[in-house]
Image: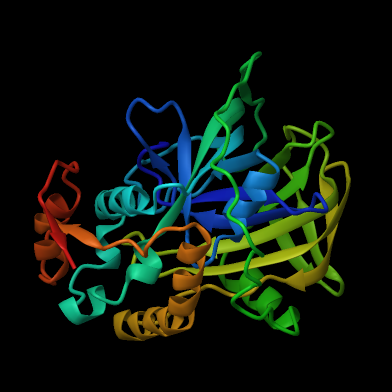
Length: 343
């Protein structure tokens, strides 16, 4: 499940201790003993939050595209280690990892578009060393969870923070959250809720949601890992089984729970990073983001005293990407030590 699920909900904490939960592609590196996510160098906020406060969590509750018939829901708390001291190695790893995980996102993309994706492929890695896990048989969370904990959790130190000021948000938050709330509750299905437990670690679970005037009325399963209270984040997410786009809406606010129900009062909606529509529409939207992020990529590389990495594509990966008819069987072969093509 850790290897094959396409999306996990990753929660990190702001300076003020509020949880921010975003859908993220999770990875497993053989022998590392960690569960890893990444973020683009040009939009480093979720890495910088983890560098300041390493207490994070990952919720695996979305089997779409995994090929798994009936996987459990798994919540992992852990200590994060941020790696950005070698951007070229980070980028090479991400190119190979995304080839194996979500090949359909790039299949058929012409070469001239691939050459413009350095703003996307240049990555910061976040390794999460698990400290505690819960798992349930279904998203209803109505049966007791299995549980595991590490009595002596240890995580390596993050790479030193770069000098200078962290960049501001690159997208503006929508002024009115209500339209997105109506669309989310009506079209995207059940969301996930994150909040902060008494020990300072974030928690996250799937919930049922109904929009009301000030936000959402939520219904919980009977067997939660804690009582949802205080600052919280409610995230709706959807993607096709063949990962060619996504729709996300994350609301920040406060949760107050009594028994199996709660009220989530919305403060604001986080900026929208969805890629929706047909392949052409999604591709044009993707490239539009690149035009905006390219200057930030250069600035963030300079802050770290490194050049912008070269995008080195494995030869077989390049052949798959420019061949629209690549089969699923080919696209999901294990990653091997392919020779690299330097852009």
